[in-house]
Length: 284
Image (cartoon, rainbow, N blue to C red; front, side):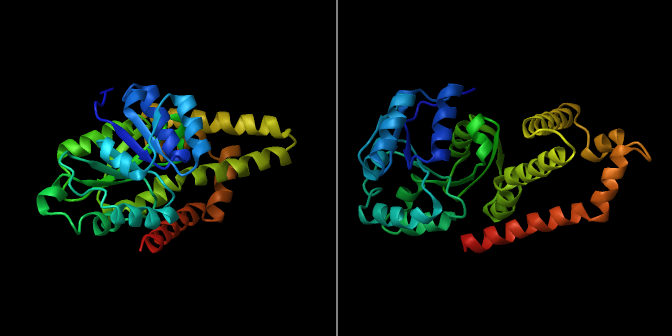
């Protein structure tokens, strides 16, 4: 995997920010001495410094000045105050070197960043501050995530490649347009919750059939892991793999018949569409 030579700064140090920091170091994409972090919670900074041997800086302005790639990793509800602070400090004014901005805040559109950062900057200065929006998901914490990334008009192919290098440390990366971000959020951002929900139901069914909770959980996890590995390795459509397991008149067919009687596929499609709609409403 390619190694970045730029300094990477994180504004915000929540679970996803930590997942990125951990992945960058574990994958060898970035050395710890090139990773910097700022968070309003001092104990949290001390924790990350101790665990990952990275460096803390005292404020957002210091992160912006010192780092080549700036990851905005605060919660969506904290983004407005943060961008107001960045704007009031004129943090990007007068900078001569390029700064790549990456936002991982769900639902925050690129335009919100442009409206706060660009107004006082000339065109040439704006070109030096491309803005990328990323939708990661929680399996990134175990290097099995999938992230969608889009960029504004000032981002070059090299900027996109740098972002992909960073994100690929956590798993797979898909380049998309911002208009697709709400759909991507519904599919992969929220997607792990759908899998956990199905696992919940399987475990509950196992308990009802007489297994103890631990055994029901082991059976469920092992089955899901195996099915996903089979689908990944054999590169065949899921409907074909399902047909192989479903003998006419057999036990599996009895289960599938219940799913179809309750139009489970339609329910899933409607649920994902509802998630996409809500994502669009939340992001304005």
